[in-house]
Structures are given as structure tokens and as C-alpha cells.
Amino acid sequence: MVERRPLLSVLSHVVLLIGVLVVAFPVYLTFVASTHTAEAIVQAPMPLLPGDQFFHNYAAALTGSEHGQGSAAPVGRMMWISLVTALVIAFGKIAISLLSAFAIVYFRFPFKQLVFWSIFVTLMLPVEVRIFPTYQVVSDLGMLNTYAGLTIPLIASATATFLFRQFFMTVPDELVEAARMDGAGPMRFFKDVLVPLSATSIAALFVIQFIYGWNQYLWPLLVTTNENMYPVVIGIKRMISGGDSAQQWNLVMATAILAMLPPALVVMLMQKWFVKGLVDTEK
Amino acid sequence: MAVEKRVVFRSAWLPWALIAPQALVIGVFFFWPAAQAILQSVQQQDAFGISTEWVGFANFQRIFSDPSYIESFKTTAIFSLLVAVGGIVLSLLLAVFADRVVRGALAYKTLLIWPYAVAPAVAGVLWLFMFAPSIGVVSYGLRQMGISWNSLLNANDAMTLIVLAAIWKQISYNFLFFLAGLNSIPKSLIEAAAIDGARPWRRFWTIVFPLLSPTTFFLLVINIVYAFFDTFGIIDAATEGGPGKDTAVLVYKVYYDGFKALDLGGSAAQSVVLMAIVVTLTVIQFRFVEKKVNY
Image (cartoon, rainbow over the protein chains, first blue to last red):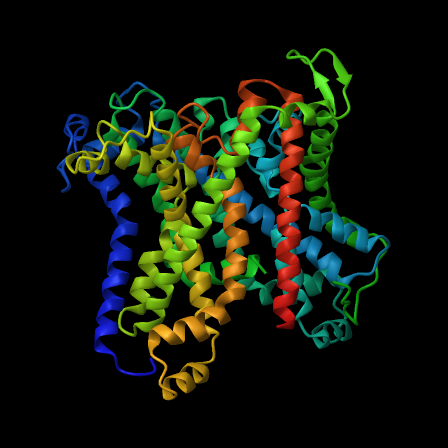
């Protein structure tokens, strides 16, 4: 702060508080709705303070024991699918990108530029742009309704490769020389020097990719036709596919809270890496 | 890009083995489908996939003479402009004030960044729930104030709903980048201006805002890309492209025409048009990033 301006400071806090409240309001409302009976919610206006159905609603949602008009698959199962999907996407991307970035930075080989640029191109086209042909490939390979079908096509992008390439370029050459002097081969150098050095980048990337994987919508919508393989984000959409007021909104909202919880926790608890990951992946 | 390491390892096969997993994945799930999309865009297939006919640019002619496609372009343009400008203005406001406060700065930051973690489809459901014509709290409040609201019937209401949801989800992202941008402005510049008697309002417009312009421009591109591609979940959950086709943005139309209407050629042609748009936006962004490095 350059000078004292008490009025401006007060204004700052007021604006920020309003911002925080507006941002939090939809989620607060969701939480409130998840603690009432379905009947209490559909009577406009719905209550604005939490009710006493918390345990009942969350238990019902997790086990899928109450049937509304839409789908009523157990949310517990969906959360599991989402978790596996998000973890496979995050770790899969990190693993293949570490390897290929290592090859691109630390080796000379023919057609290197071509390889580099063909990986680079994948940055440009998100899966949304080529959904139909990608869907056909996955369906031809018999990967519909499988974890492989949910994850591998989403691993096919180069964001992480570029992040690691950039990081590897900053690693001093002396480290390679020292490793070679000590008789370490390339894989030994990779495992004992490069990967440990990349720990922060890996953590940052993990946060971003975990959220990316957990929040996928269009792709799982296409490749999962079986209720047993729905990730939780799809599950919510399927639950409200009836009408407007005929839903069991309390269960839908309990599911929404459950679906938001893991990625929100990852962002808030790993805030430092999250910010780093966000800024790095966009360079 | 042409920078090379001075010291490298030597092996004829190892680099290929290291690249193999990524090459395999992007080959099968990126290049093959992308090539298919381009191929399908110049073909006409019947609904059962039995016969395929070469039709040249007929698919493109067809989609561009289809009023609903042109309409979808307009919808996308309005939607992405509103999302980008609205999101940028609001998050800049929050970032400027967050940059000022000393007490509770971290708390504010933490409380403002988590919407990034909410899935677009979940965000759509949340906002739908608030604005649902019969049960929504906000639509009830609007009715009490004498404003009629029905996002299921009124196109403007539906557009407002998805724009709000999309901005809400993107605020945290813009906020963090603006905060980083504000942090990198040298304090001495601000102090010098203050000594010269410039008040905060004037300092913002003459120093802070111009120095933030690279960040703002970057975010503008990113937000447009976001509105184009990442908001599918919001729209599908909140309005399903309705009422009618009034909130069907381009990506939604690709999905709808391909998977619901089974018009493969048309959907593929739309995919190719989208690819051209993304590539253009990416090129703009990269040229700008290079400029920023020199700057």
C-alpha cells in the first residue's frame, strides 16, 4: 500500500466480501437443499437455512436407495469411477509426458523436429472438436464403458510434455556431466536426478490434471452408456433428466456437493501447487 | 524452440522407446480421429454407414447455407463475448482490491479460487437450481420484484443463465492471473505517481491498467477459448441448448448434429470449421506471448 486511505481500505473489504459471498452463494444454497426433504425444496421459496435431513439424504444418495424419476445409481460407485478416472488421467499424462520430454530434451535423433511439432499440434485441438471420430475409434476398439475408454483418449494431449520440456531446459548441464562421470546411464540419470528435481512441477501438474479428469463431461457422456460406469458428474445430469419440479432435488444437491468436494479440497489444500500449475501450463 | 542441450545422451533406440507411449496415444486418439474428421467432412454417409460418397465441399456449402448454423455462430459470438468481458471486468475488480488489502488477503484468495474446481456440468446444475422457473430461489425473488423470469421459455433469460454460470466458474482463473499481473508491477512506479499527486483512481487508469494489458489480452483469448469449448457441460446441464436452439453454441451443435441428428458429414464439416477457429486463436495467442517476452 502506498498511502493510507482508510475509506478505500473499507471499500476493498466490502467489495471482496461481496465477491466471496456471491461466489459462495450457489454452493451454500446447494448445501442447504441437500439437508431438506424433497417436498420442502419444491415449495417456493425454499428454506434458506440448513435442515435436519443431512444424514438421511447423503446416505440415500451414496447408496442409491431412493428412486426418483431420473437415474438412481449409487453415488458411491460413481465417486469411485470418477476417482479412478481422474487419477489415471493425471498419472498417465505425467508418466508419458516425463518420458517423451526426456527423450526430446536429452537425446539427438532423426526427425526430432517433426516429432516435436506433431506433439505440439495436439495442444491446439481439444477433444470437443473431434468428438465424433474419436468416439468411433474408441467404439471400434471395444473400449466403450471401460476405464481405458474413459481415460486414454484424454491423455492424448501435450500440455504436460511442454511443461516438462521447459523445466528440463532449465536443469544445468553440469548435472548430466557429473552423472556421466559417475557412470550413470540415461535411465539412471532420469530416475535419480531428473524426476526428483521435477517434484514441484509434477505436483502442480497433478492438481490441474486431477481436476481436469474429475470434471470431464462431454467425453464420459459419450463413452459410458452403462449406469455402472457413470462418473459422478454424468450421474448428476442423468438424475435431473426428468422434469423441473418432479426431481428429488435434495438428493441431486447432495450428489452435487459430493461431486464438488474432492476437487475443491485438492485446490484448497494444494493451493500453492495449484497456482503454479495453472500459471505454468498456460505459458 | 530450436534451443538444444549442449550435453546429450547417445542411443539409437532409447529415445524412440521413450517417445513410444505418447506417440501411440496421440497417434490413435488424436491424429487418426482428426484425419477422419477432415475426411468425413468431404464425404456423405447414409445413416446406417453402409454407403459413403465423395461430395467435395458440399457439406461446407450446406452448413454455411443453413440458417441455424449461422444462428449458432451468432449465439456463440454473443455468448463468448459476454462471458469474456463480464468475467474479466469482475475478476479485475476483485483482483485490484485483493491486491490492496493486507489483512485476510490469503483468506480472500482461498475463498475466491475454489470455483475453478467445480465441474462445468455441476455449475450448470447449481445455477439451474437457483433460476429454475418454479422452484428456484432467485427466480422466486425476481417474481416478487415483478420481473418475470423463465429460462425454459425465454431465450434471453436462458442466455443470461448460462453466461452467469460460465462467468462464475471462470472468475477464479482470471482472478489468479490478474493477481499475478498486479504483483509484477514495480511498486516504485506506483509510489512515484503517488508522490506526484496522482490519486488511486488516476493511478489505476494511467499506470496499472496499461501495464496489465498483456495479461488482459491473454485472458481475453483464453476466455473466448473457454467459452467456445469448455462450457459444453454448463449449457447441456442448464438449458440443453434451448429454448429451441437459442443457446446452442457451435460445440453443442457439433455434438447434437453428430450424435442426435446423425448427420455425420455436417457434424464433421462443423468440426473442421471449429478446428480452424481454435488454430487461429492459438496462433494469435502465441504471437502475443512472443511479444510479451520481448516486452
